[in-house]
Image 1 (tube, one colour):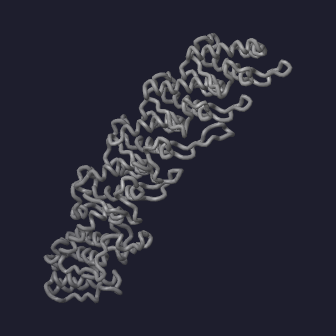
Image 2: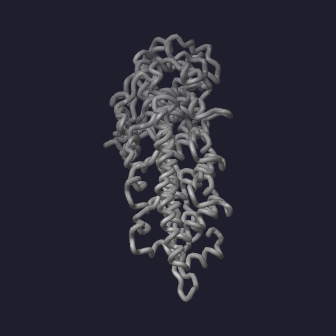
Length: 550
């Protein structure tokens, strides 16, 4: 009865139709077929509406389960196959055109569902997700598994179809039985998008990722919305979101979940020939802006990088309790302060501590490996080739110190070092309102928008030290500076270093009087309302006068 033309005639017979129904139930007893009784009548029922074809004046008007099953069997087994003891590998349904016809059959669809559960139970490779996503095996409902059809036309593909398409990609068209795979196969974006439409394969991949927790990766406890990453009943942090397009009858990707973002991140990090299972990388790998943009979209890779940062106790011996928005930096369950935030299209919404730290530590390392970084030392930073640019009025244009100190973790490490240096510079006077080494001391109500750059001492203080260091002036022993031996260029650099920081600008007289050993410089010549340019010009002139006197 596999021949379609013969079949239409044969199935006009109620006797033949009923005989076929009974043979199908016999095959169920043999275990080769499974019958979903919520969708077709049982063997004892007097009703056969869902089994028999419908005819009107000998003309076929509606194909039902017998016809759909016979056509599915023909496509699965071939024209010469027999119906008895029917067995098949799911790979026979990988062809999507054939598949849409095959899955019209409730019996074949249910048989495939049973095969999927058997495969999951046999070798444990496949994982069946929560009933929030797919109907349980013992549940008679198959609405999340079976395709939907209307008068024989496909309305919507569901899990069986998505799983078959995913399996075709993963097995490269090979057998479904004893399926096994590494997630590296999903680095290909086209394959990834297809595979992650399947809840079964998505759940399987989640389990593979979680198995590597605290090994090659670190899985965060929660996502940025506070949803648990280990809650199998809610995989919204992990799964892609797709929407069925009723026009082209395809699923369209609406939003990447963590599986996809992590796969993209791992692919960006791995060298040629590398694998997820053996992945090991240093922070230097993600200093490249393009790679970093991809990697930090992933919560798993973000948590892995946080762990790598905090693992270097020599360099990062402590972190502040909160960031400038009063978000915790020490709460393992809430990484809102650490992780970058992205919208559904993967566009950056907010650069947070992780992104800021990586940009800052890249400058501090100066080409070295992070794992080789010991205790952070100011003199090591000053020896680097950094960008510090001012305009002709000595207003800041750009500075690598701004990038470094944008990280509250690095500021937390560096600020005490700067304070110690300030305490030991002879003639340096603490401002009337005290040193402002931390941005948190300047902002109001944890609102970074209230930050006053002119009141922030740490950055400008370090810029002054850097300018002096580059000019060969020893800031640790300013009192021993021989002004008479300074070149014109060095005098100009020295004067610039004095005026670009409010701490030094308000201490010019005491510093230089200490150098020459008597009172000559008058602080009123340099203090506000004198501009930086005015103070600079006066200081250069007075140093040159002193050179002639000495």
